[in-house]
Amino acid sequence: MENDLEIDNLPNRLTFFRMLMIPVIVVTLYFDIDTPTDLLTYRKYLGHIACWIFVAASITDFFDGYFARKYNIVTVFGSFLDPIADKFLVVASLIMLMALNRVNAVVVIILVLREMYMTSLRLLAMTEEVTVPVSSLGKWKTTAQMIAIPMLMIHEKFLGLPLPIMGTVLIYIAAFVSLLSALLYSLSMVKKLQEKRHEKKRMKKANA
Image: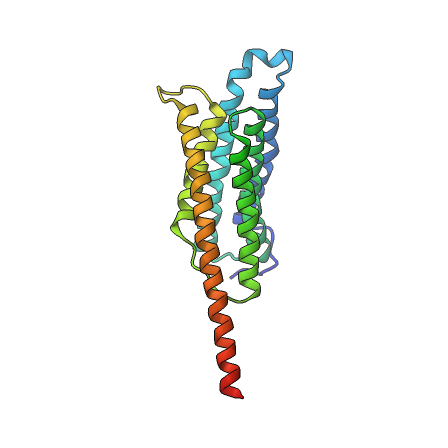
């Protein structure tokens, strides 16, 4: 296993690359909102550029985890930065899509606040030293979300596929599943905390 404080390794480089792609996506979509006169001819390509940059950045998320597991490269820095990079990529993209009126503001609020809420719950679980199994619904939410976002970036028919409709349906599914998975995780967390509390009371009675 590498030094916990190691920064310069392949997984972290991929994570850094993902972070660097975020402002590129933001600037590209910003030009789609407020296109300079000299870029009007190329405006229709901006969504495609943002889409494929997002896809490339998303792929690095798979590979940094793959290489970390394959070569047993686990560092404190990587464990901190990787999930942050994922959230920044998704949140920044959703906000820009909302500015382009391609995603309903309520959907963005649900998805962003859900991430903040789940991060807080996981910190609580860590603090209380309880293990809460993650529902597969969370993976379905992530999958729907990561497919919907690039579709909404292009936001026009592509290869005969109605990407605006498909992306909108998927992002609504992601919002619904995110609420459901957060509810199930919360209930599981409460159950685990109650079990821990009862166990502490039982131990006190046994030692009394």
